[in-house]
Image 1: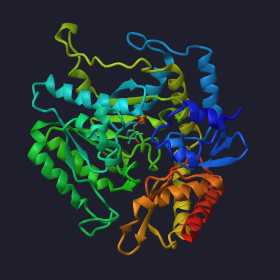
Image 2 (image 1 turned 30 degrees about the horizontal axis):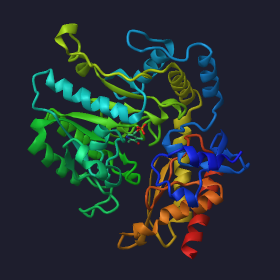
Image 3 (image 1 turned 180 degrees about the horizontal axis):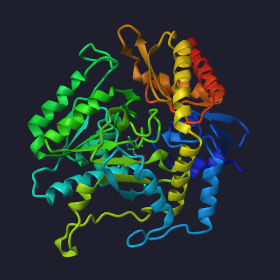
Amino acid sequence: MDWVKEDLEYIWHPGSQMKDYEDLPPIVIERGEGLWLYDTEGRRYADVVSSWWCNLLGHCHPKINAAVKNQVDTLEHVIFANFTHKPAIELCRGLAKLVPPGLKKFFFTDNGSSAIEVALKMSFQYYLQTGRPQKRKFMALTGAYHGETLGALSVSGLSLNASVYQPLLLDIIRVQGPDCYRCPYGLTRESCRAECFEQAEAALALHGRETCGFIVEPLVQAAAGMRIYPPVYLKKLREACDAFDVHLIADEIAVGYGRTGKMFACDHAGISPDIMCLSKGLTGGYMPMALAVTTQKIYDAFYADYNEGKGFMHSHTYCGNPLACSAGVAVLETLAQDDILANARANAEYFHKLAIEMLEPESHVGEIRHIGLINAIELVADKRAKTPLNPEKRTGYRIYKEALKMGLILRPLGDVLYFNPPLNITRAEMDFVVQTTLRAMGKIWDD
Ligand SMILES: *Cc1c(COP(=O)(O)O)cnc(C)c1O
């Protein structure tokens, strides 16, 4: 059977120009174990991008596998309106102890984008039924990524994903976000006071009255190239949102679950959002599921006699799927029992030091930024001037193709290469990842 030929006959792959597949056909993966994926030819690949950032504890983790196997023989799915089940309750009970203080109510959806839609609708409806219907706009940062459905895409600020669909999108208030590598104030993220927050402050002063929610990816604008900014920005945002009576919506879909070294990125700033969205690591990357978590205060604004019409009438068929919840429970148990976060924090220093030592001297490496185990390597034409490479040369993509031949999945964001591995990656595996990246880059510089 020619699996590749058949794939191309039937399948339209996500986020791809399918013509690229002429040159780089899809790799048929047969099985996974830990950091590694194995293809049908017996070749193996280090999945240092965690299969789009969702694989949290390695592929086919024994404890998660066991939990899902057990669940599939017990209950595979049940309608979640008026029905519930133990895995959903256990998951929320466990998460309630971990989320930032004040977040109490858990609304399930079946992917990250739909959790963003929930957050937007919930925020709007809250103000509608608490007497402030004029509050119906959203603020979001440049470089933001919040998903692909039309509401989520509206608040996303990445031109590549959004520009084609502009005529279909919501009218939102775009705020210039932090850009710490090329800081317009000439400051550094280690020592600044988030002076750039004045942009958000000004937008809130001007439009706060008509705004219901300000949505951000806390600390890391992931899809924009793992752009990292300091916690003080979030502290200021929390204060300003309070002052202008605007919900702070934290999209922790990519950065939650220990990716930044703490359970949630908001924890670095010691803040609680009004609504927090989770997905990706939530099920360890096993099954599509997401949550919008909110406060008692927001929940209470929807709590009324049925005929008042104040309920949150939003649902997805697979809300609270028991298989996904059972994976989610196993993830929380493993995080606690195996001391995953503490180990990841210790390893994060090692990983970053290694990346700096081996990769920073390279001629086109502009910055290697990191938080937790996330490391991003921004490639530039000129190190001192920080000028970007010509995007049409697709340098990142060409390095990705070289690295694949060497057994490493490095799928970059434009010309930003990054590592965002499972939290239990070993030091030997980190050595392989960094060495292979160096070799793959070398191939391209030589061309
Ligand atoms: C992946 C992601 C989303 C969208 O989640 P999907 O499950 O792909 O719809 C939203 N926000 C952030 C920050 C993400 O990384």
